[in-house]
Length: 464
Image (cartoon, rainbow, N blue to C red; front, side):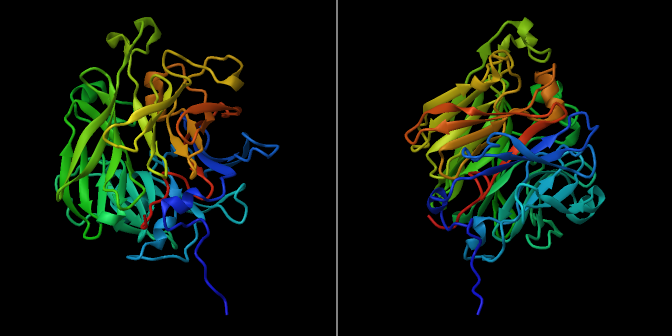
C-alpha cells in the first residue's frame, strides 16, 4: 500500500524549517524596463561547491513583453500543514509569477528540473480582471486554503485594490477574497497571523500614481498609503484600521512574527514628509485590539545638490528610502534595505520594542555608489532593494532595482542590475561573500528572489 508523505520542504514550525538543508538555487524575477524584450525568471546557482556558483545558469523568457515581473511566490508551502485547512499532500512545485504592469499571471513548474523551469499556464489580463475583479497583481502568498494574491486596483484600474484567491492545485482564479471591505481602498502587501485568525494588509497607491513614476504632488500631499488594515482571516471581514499619519508615506512590506504564538510584526514606511527619514513600525496586540508604534527611524543624509537626481536637488539630502525588510525565521534579526543610501542594515529585534543595530553594509546608493569586493572598484548604482534570507538565517541575498519608472526618478542614468550575498554571523554582524556578485544582462534588472525549498518571506507556520 502506498503511503502519502507531505512535501519534505513543508515544516510544522519555523524552528524545524531553520534546521533544513541549505538552498542551492534561487529564482529571480527580472524585467526589461523598456518593454522591448520579454521579462524572464532567472535561475542562479547558490551552491558554493558548484563550478557555476554565483552565476545565472538559465533564463526562462516570458511569452510577452511589458509584464514588469515583480513579487512572486509558491503555490504551496508550510501553511498546508495547518489543522484548520490541511493540504499536506500538495507539493511546493509551482511558482506563481505575476506581471505588475500587464496583470498577466504565469504558472511556472520547477520540476522535474529546477534549473530549467517551464511555463505551464498563463492567465491573460482580461481573464484576471473578469474572474478576480482586480488588476495589477502585486504579492503572492501561499495560504492554508489557497493562493492569496494582493492586487493594487480593481478591474478598471481604479480603487479599491484588494486580494483574490487562486486554487493551489488547478491554479484557477476563484475570485475576490473580501466579504466586507470597510474603509480599505488602497492595497499593497498582505500577510497573516495564523494563530490569531488575522490577516493584515498595507497600502501603496493606484496605478495612475506609480506606473509612470511617483507623482510629486501626490507624495507631498500625503496621498499615498499610510495605513494598516486588520481583517478576520476566516470571515473575510475588515475589523480595524491603524493610521500612521499622512507624513509617513508608503507603508509597504509586512513581516509578521513566524512563531504563531507571537501577535506582532514589522512594517516599513518608505519616507517621511517631515524630514525624508524612513521608519520601521511594530504592530502588536493591545488587549482585544491591534496597535502600532515606531521602533526605528533612519535619518536622511545631507548631500550636495549637484550629486542628486532632479527629484531630490531641492532637499539637499539623500533619503534612506527603506523599500524592503525581511525577518529571520527565529524572529531575531530584521533586515532593512535602504535603497537610497545603499545600506543593508541588520537589527536584533529579540526585544521588538527595543531593536539594536548589529550589522550594516553599504553598496550602491544615490550618492555613495559604493562598490563590492568583486566589482574591482567600480562605482555601483541602485541599492539594496528586495531582500531574502535563508531558512537558517546565515545567508542574506538582495537585488538592486525597485520598479522601472521609479528607478529612473532616483537613478536617472539607469540601473545596472546586480545581486549580492551577505554572510550573517549567528550572534549578529554582516559581511559580503566576496565570491558572489551576479551582474545582470544589460537588457534586464533583477527584482524579487525566491530560494529553493522556501525562505523567510515565503512560508507561514501553524506551530510554535
